[in-house]
Image (tube, helix red, strand yellow):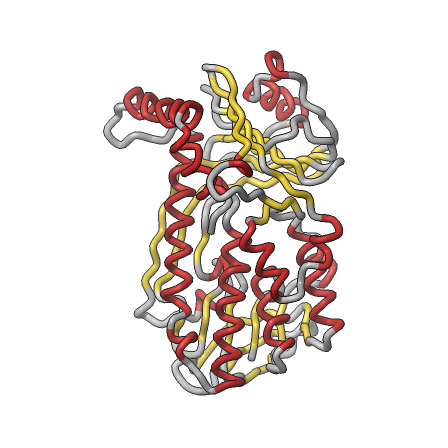
Length: 387
């Protein structure tokens, strides 16, 4: 078994296979240090925590993960808070930075005898329609190597070899939501005890705690904005304005250590299996970060595929593999729908009909329902932490 990509999807999959005696190798084009320090999302839904627990991969999260269950919305009409862990199914998020999760998974995989080839870039998958597909790899020293396996799992993102190797029959669904965020990682304590969503005439602003000393912020910006276009002073001034710090308390500022512009897009491939090639994580579907579903979908898909492969390779039962795409796509489309709902809630979107005032009134009606309606709050909570 060849797994391409050493992110959460690839490493959860690798650990499951290794624990059941299935021989596999993980190919990762980056160096180990880069893999363990890539700053990504940090909100894990309850299902992800359960996946880690039942596969014996939860040691780190049990020691250092923190439960979180409150979000706060700020608008021109005031602010309101939802203690969503008491709503819906009564479940919280667990805050655990993704690079810590990846480091845990990698240590567990290597300690168990797993093989990872760092600096090895998979450049093509061929013969996926046959029983032994081939992965062409450029090793760290530049040597080309061909690896044959019974199956290949592409866990290498939307621009990886998995998507580049799809046959003509694959269908790609894509939507650009017309919204961009400036994503910021600040060496600063959290400024509130909740995930903060602020809706402002100048654009959305978001606050998400990562640790006692690190906070992630988001600022809506014009599409095409460069990550370094705004000075630190401009960033903090815009955050304070949009989050209405003058009314609700100052923000805890500090050095901004990472910046990136995130274009909110949705992208889904159907089906997720093409012969002996399987798409997992961002290779299967890209989801906007508006509802923090990406890494959680990746872990869900990796577990489904891992146990289906064990059924096939160890027990000779291919039925679960045959259902992999169908099962995962049901979760993916549900997550896409909620993500789209969050985008419409938080942003003034371009209106093809030119009636932006009508669209804006609808947005504030959604916010009012979320503030005042118990049924709307329960629906939100179930979907916010669901997958």
